[in-house]
Length: 113
Length: 111
Image 1 (cartoon, rainbow over the protein chains, first blue to last red):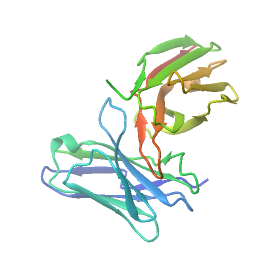
Image 2 (image 1 turned 60 degrees about the vertical axis):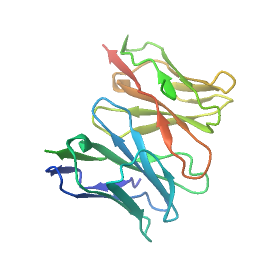
Image 3 (image 1 turned 135 degrees about the vertical axis):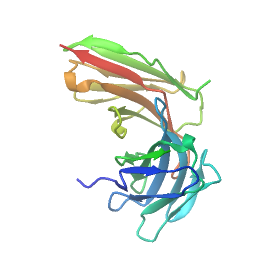
Image 4 (image 1 turned 90 degrees about the horizontal axis):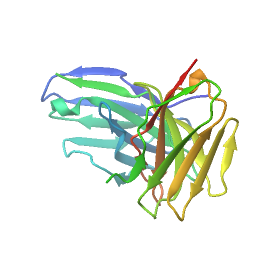
């Protein structure tokens, strides 16, 4: 079965650089979520989109922005990167109509040097 | 205090053992409940949703007590491949609402 696709899988950036993470949800899933997982921590919710509109917002820094496109894929844009942004970034998607269960992609491992 | 509390473990059990994990959540408005498993440096994978009536999937049984805000997971006949971190997860009300994760309980199944 098709899963959530994330790219790139690994990314190394310098401080103050920008990064763009991409997420392609499972086909026919219309809702996308972004989570950040630091070392030894549980995943923390960043932001979600339903039908291309921002649905819920968590502890996402102002330096980050995200959007969902007409084909339902989503991009997380991160600017002025800091060392503390080094983490695993997961995208998840959920299917209509309930949108309760969320299925996670393999993640993007971001390292900021 | 975290919104979802779990015993971090680790739980070290022999193959074939039965092991139980517990979890409590503080937000009484939580609507949906799940157990996910996560292997080291991998994504969380949905193990099962949890319903008030209790539900079973093979060797796994989950229970929810809304009055006590308590969730449990029972694993019978543990396999080596069950070794992972088990995350108790709750979902708020509304469409596309966030998941809130517990810190996870580490399980190590040994020969």
